[in-house]
Image (cartoon, rainbow, N blue to C red):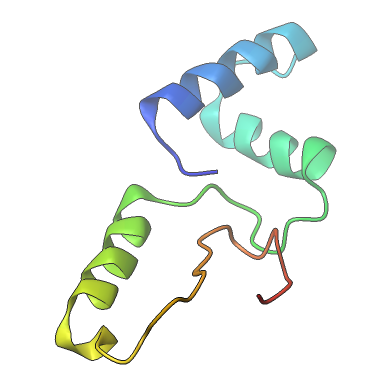
Length: 81
């Protein structure tokens, strides 16, 4: 999951239903402890992290990458294709 306004809105709405309060740090911590406990990186991804990968792949540094599945999911999907 990437931290966008929409994701934050959905998580805040879920937190209200679950009685987690409205503190954003608490909501994130509870989300990863209670809902996504198997996630390797215990935080939401950042939009700029996606942009960094796109910039790398589109740059000359990524010239030899061909037909790869590059996941930006904090380790949620540990398998490699």
